[in-house]
Image 1 (cartoon, rainbow, N blue to C red):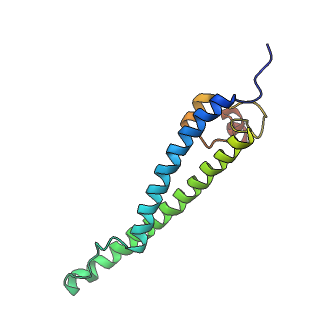
Image 2: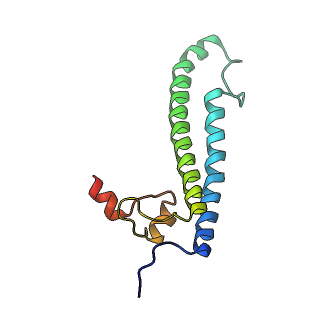
Image 3: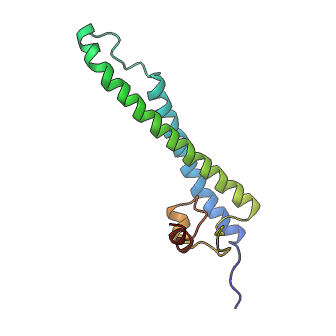
Amino acid sequence: MTEKTRYSDAELEEFKAIITEKLEKACRDYDHLKAAVMNTDGNDDADTAPTFKVLEEGASTLSKEEAGQLAQRQMKFIQHLKGALIRIENKTYGICRETGKLIPKERLKAVPHATLSIDAKNTKK
């Protein structure tokens, strides 16, 4: 029996559904983080006493910096998911870029944007 070189169209559709769901959630999360950085929700300390405001400015800045870093990570994750959708369209999804062999389904379900098998990832370290 020959070894499978790519996932079937039905399997690719199954992965596409998983990735699309994760992508939609990631975009919602990104929008929330972006709103926190830009303070568009209106829940700030602008209407409180000046003394309290001075104490809160440091915490507010730190919170915005953390939200900004999380937003950057979320955008990178979104880009990886979009790349995975392109690989599905090209029918190259799930093929390890180092070994050329199929990445196990279990790994792809856990990390749907993976481009390396566990073995290839471990040898790169």
